[in-house]
Length: 616
Image 1 (cartoon, helix red, strand yellow):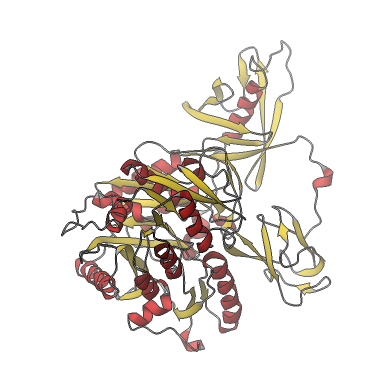
Image 2 (spheres, rainbow, N blue to C red):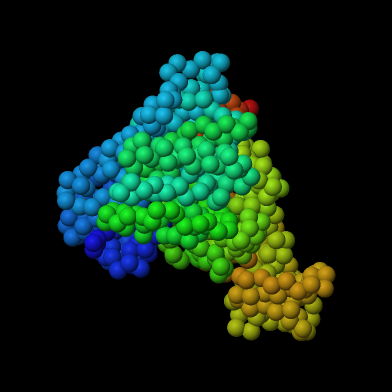
């Protein structure tokens, strides 16, 4: 029997595995980087071991350090989670060689399937060796790992070399393996996968289908089970192919076989992920099982039942990211002041109130999962929970998720992997509450005075307050009178430092207000920044200034780029790496480069001045 499990991972998945271990009475051990010293997964584990350093290459990708940590902490088993070393056969062998239980498939099965190039060869599919114009569009993919890292769609042959270089860099950073390959890119396809579970006694379960078509940068955003609108015959075909792939490599444990369904209904094998998937909670909800508990049971040599349990209802999962979808999915950093969702949905997260979101790891904050008897009910339940969630901190993709779940193309199950390519602008249009600034101002004036301000017998000038909502600024006015606080066009029913009630056109509306620091204010789902009455002249920047959109590392600068160069709007100037992804920084205007403050390897902070392009 397994007594102590070390999880060779971090964040949400480590916390999720620890939860099951606690329920089973199994002790837990966490490993953490220096950046994760106070992270939630390190705090909730029974014991922790430090991995010196901050980057994945220094820490979570160092298999020898993790095995050493497991032995030192007295663990008798290692669970890899997903990402990092979860599909690394050499790491699995090192765990077994140390006399520990490996909670995953045999190294030989990982080796056969973890590399997408070898997996395709096993399935009789060859990658493209020499790409021509006739092959376009093509997809560049990392051979190891997943999560959309190291993936690039190439539509012009001239872009291929640059995208291969970028993909290799991302793959090396995320997985420690820079191997990439090229395959045809299927336009308008659906991403459908099959969850399998196999024991050491020859039983293989096929646990239904999942649709993961809504993706950004080839990384899944919304997943659901079962895949809606899939013909029974096709679903059966996918199930049989998945079981056949598992048996072909004598698979054990949890795994996923992924397919792309072309518009003509043909199934194209993509890969087999030899690990637990991020989206596994939707399968757990539909089948009423705990996949981590079953992984542990299989690792202990226990058999599965002959047949899996029957599925019930529909489940949908949304990944909540700290990012701005409207600006090329730019990751966001900072303090997560508050994260809470209504009862009735599942929240898997690696963060808690007050935690910092750094630059070294994936920007996913949490997964929110809803289960209901029907797909329509699950959709409504999840969209409502996200809309009502309290999220105080960096900008997130919450609005995108809510709008996606309510989009007609998604509600009618006519989506494909190009969903965000077609609809991103409309899904990211911000519609902040026009009365949120007034509510913030009224709460602020109450918070500064025990009596909610003061009134005068003589008429007075209105009080003013300025706020920024995204890219727009606004000014609100209110008065202190004998009757209390008043504002034009609304009736102030109630106002205190945390709650404001306004009557607008006869309807009373409630606003929950929270402030952090001197300027950040959250009013329901609207984020505001309080502005000074008189802007600081020193804060003005020269036209054409290019600021870092996030903290990160300069990985490269465009070849030959130097001060004095003529550049065109949208031309790539340099690349930043943050949260395990590369981000292309382009010229803001056509003109002359008059300053360049970035060199490869340089660490830059948010809003650091990278370059100046004098517009022409």
